[in-house]
Length: 114
Image 1 (cartoon, rainbow, N blue to C red):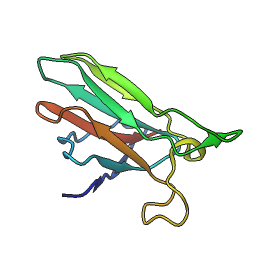
Image 2: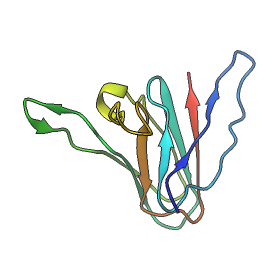
Image 3: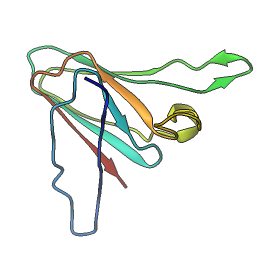
């Protein structure tokens, strides 16, 4: 299985009830910019959500963004600047970010723009 491209859901003035789905084992491909990744952890243990950094500064690679989502909690992770997380322009996923999850069972997510 490959990474799954996720559709970004736009917040409107009338509100947004996000559609949450379970992440794939191989991870997600999400838009960069003014977006937030909403992660709901319904599992019995903490999970890690990792957004792969693609940038470097002065020849040093930036570290990936790793966010712990405790059991039973909901986290909003973002924004995700393209200059930090976007895939290279020669990639099929140019300008989009890769996201990995340490567990998928009882975990849901949505990508939301604001």
